[in-house]
Length: 505
Image 1 (cartoon, helix red, strand yellow):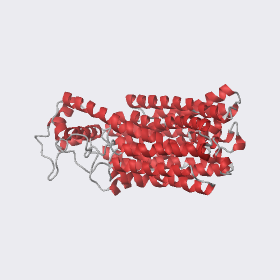
Image 2: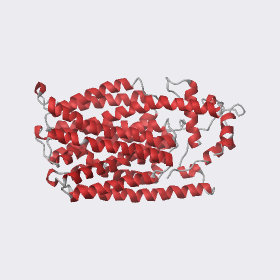
Image 3: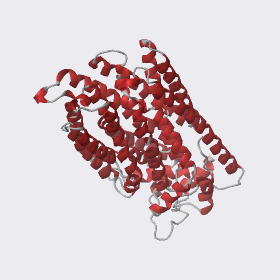
Image 4: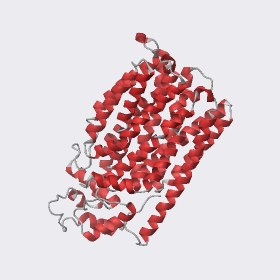
């Protein structure tokens, strides 16, 4: 869009009345000069990064700790203590994702109608309590029940946090911040090994409890404390966050309008956006792609057991799980920063999966300790390196209406996590140390991701060409749009702003 049009859009508010009965919440932002708006926007982003992004990142670290500490607990003896076979342990891992998948889509629709500063900390408090109860269970049945409920409640957080981020940041800011959020999973996995190593070496037998029980009790106590703090820090939506001034709220809303040419917080019925999401065939391609990515990164659920095949003792095994996740964290953030900067998602999904394939092949083919540990780093870093890029790409593509975006990211994440149910059975104890079946399946699904990503890139580039030639409208290509009008500008300028939109491929 030309600077002339942007300037006109920011300053025409006084000349054009708002719709009847509709207050112009963004008037303060429209009346700013370009320099004033840039300064206000920079200040707003600093606040959001400090309060929104940092809060959800810490919450996601705890989310991943509480979800995946069962992997560290296996090394610490949970299976032996509860007299579980390897198949029963796999069921305990898988059953969490049954609950996790069921609740994601309804939860994001609920979230769009509620205050995130209440909803997300509330569900976090509940999952912390459920995780603590795992530490006092005495049989496989109790573990199954608690893991299912834990997944059901935890389902609200990750797609909800992604949706909240997309409700405050522009498309060229969304990817790196989604990656920063996702890095909480790598850090949570890394911390899980460190914390478990410390508990295993220092608290086994304290007050008559095995070390694996202390893992759940200690980590879940921290979860509940952080949830209470988050309720006072998190924002709600740009239009109603209490700790922002009216001018800051106006800037927050106007910059989202400038990004997509449409209002984000429209008052349309949730059913409209929900139906638009399910009617868009691209949703199912994204969902299938993410399912394949999740299969490729499913090693995380068994990673301490995979590392244990290197032959080290319990404590050293848990410590060796840390470096691969730190590498994955750095690659994920750097990769998403590059995707935002270059306005490209597809290639930033492809290359990490190519790296993961190398790791899977080496892990299945070699028994050399150094080669296998390199393979473990490659499979974790590669498998996780594209996760946040794909979920950000979904939201960048299915941007409006916002209920469509909320439904889409939740649906894609839910379908992707179906893989955790069947992939949990790919790592039976008797397939160690090479885990040939698991590594072969992971490599095949990684290749499928590459093929599907290239297909979606082609689809979106063709849509952009149709838009450039004027053959279709943005609303037709988006397969839906915001039901609210942009206040304070002429109808002609609204059309110009909307039709300037292009998909990121």
